[in-house]
Image (cartoon, helix red, strand yellow):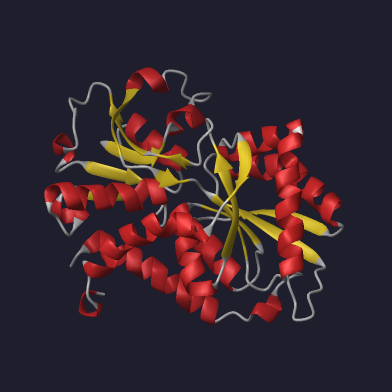
Length: 306
């Protein structure tokens, strides 16, 4: 069995089943048929310590609620899959989704991208392959047979793009047993980096440069770990909304987030949470490159394999 791909599709299937089993009427506010909104929930997945993110996003939720005139709650989710599920059942209305998470949420639940991050003046970024500096690993080829740490199976930079790159370059269909010897789902970009630092994995794939996220606790991480390779450009992570919200509310939320570009405190929070330097507009078509990469996995596994 194509193990990693099968695990990915199992996660995707779980998203669909969970969403189907949960009524959107069970949400705590969200969009209703008459367009009324009593409360909004923003969903985040930690790229650092969960408790720290919860504390950091609280002022952002408060400010957004103040501007919109409704209560806004910031909710830290356990994984991108859990966030997609929550948006599918309308328990979360505003999702900070990575590119692949957005593509899945859009395909399955009609979630709509409105904005994305800008970092270093760019709306795109690359995934990186990180190894120990003393590992002797100097190229993708050297990673064959090693243990791979990924943040999450639905992570764009942590899984999707690196796996597709390896499939293309080495002609393998099963990235785990056909290339890597083992795959560790670390539960976050920081944890993937730490897995390599502590010797629990040989290589981690993360956003560029996730090493800085753990530098406070691991001051020598930039010396101990090195970047060996990068993927092609990936569209930046998104702010996406559930389909239950009316067009009027979508516009209000979009305009309010864009206004935060002029609020130094809010941009500082965005930078602390996900290293956003600015908030810029986004179009669904920008994520077609992610869809086409996702298709590689659809084509590499049949229903009988799952």
